[in-house]
Length: 196
Image (cartoon, rainbow, N blue to C red; front, side, top):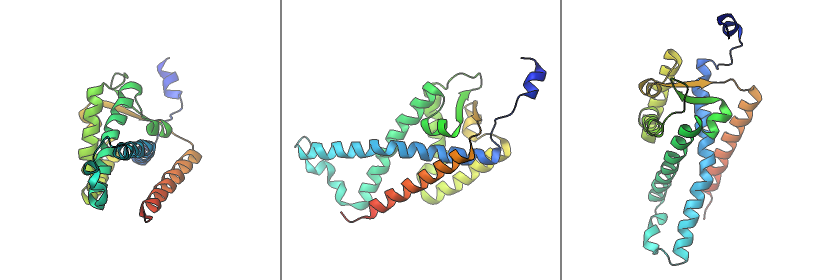
């Protein structure tokens, strides 16, 4: 292609202001896709106890709501720690990122290596999400969004020299994904509040 052809090509890059929303929605989609695996893990644990393969003391934490919530978050985090780096290192995207048109590559265009994908995951979790600590997380998300909108890249992508591209998606897809994510999240909240 000549330089004139490249200059005349349509730009499908998403605006910076929408990039943070696309990343948030992509992460939410991935979280929803991981949720069945969390249920399967706990079902297998319960089955092991019922079959006598594990003592009940091994799962005594289920009687304490706080301990149960902590264990659920730890299991979710462990599954996400497998999910995201494995997808990024092999495909350059995760299912949620793919739906929202987000692709993470090295500066030379090749897939991110597994070590870099794990480093990115840790950096996002610690700096971008504040380790999931409620108030700290909100502050970290706002700072990361500000950096992305003003500078065009997050600290972790700059630090690891990664190139993140954002393809535009149709507004109907955005609407559908927002409705699904919000609807499924509310459904999970309602179901988790039901008396056992």
